[in-house]
Image (tube, rainbow, N blue to C red; front, side):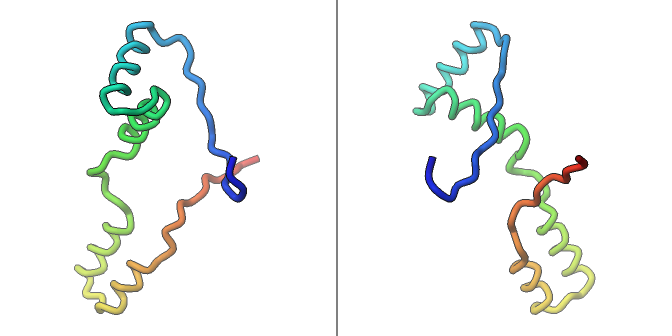
Length: 90
């Protein structure tokens, strides 16, 4: 692991059919990547589709409709884009 990088979460998927596993391997080969990389891509596409509405873009549009100045709209574009961490209730 490269120094300074956070450890990424891991998921184990059990009890998938041989047919599904074979289809995943075939799909991975077609895309020129490992089965694991293919599964990551499938999951990413499923939970973060390209057409999703992004909160920042939505707020920007609302701000324009509300009559914000160009300077105020520019401030929205320069916001912190770091992904939020989920809350820990323990």
